[in-house]
Length: 174
Ligand code: IMP
Ligand code: MG
Image (cartoon, rainbow, N blue to C red):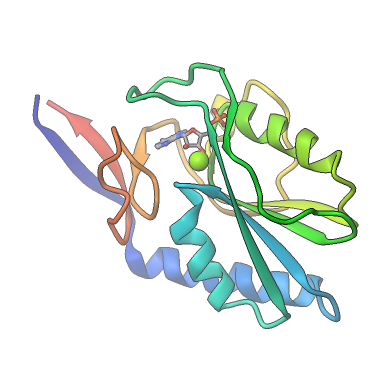
């Protein structure tokens, strides 16, 4: 089976949109420090690019949850693989994700992080597939709404490949 990647969002388009979101976050969090929580591994490319474009003070932490195997379908199982290093109490927390699909991962994660008493808790995702939502999730910042297609690049993988693509592409399997 050969895989081909069709460009959905070019590097220029993605970078332009990340700059816009960075400006919006800098405005919304004026006078405060924003604590970015990156959901590994997918959120890492987006978080780094976003963090560089935020002008208020930023701190960072990382966590890893698993909901997908090597397949393109959600297992519905969410497990913490790596927890945060720092407590969230009294912090203005912004969770940074690559994509919201069924919403299962984020709904679980936001519930869990909310119990740690942050001062505020918001969600920023590079991509959203609204058609695929199974569990309701409030998204505060969205890069792009995309159709129901399996995408890779900018941190997103297919069987751990293609995370390093500097654009968003659709995997086409012949
Ligand atoms: P959800 O729990 O169904 O919302 O899935 C969220 C996670 O599934 C994301 O953080 C991704 O890791 C993965 N995922 C969902 N859709 C895609 C896709 O199109 N490409 C790559 N990974 C995806
Ligand atoms: Mg992810």
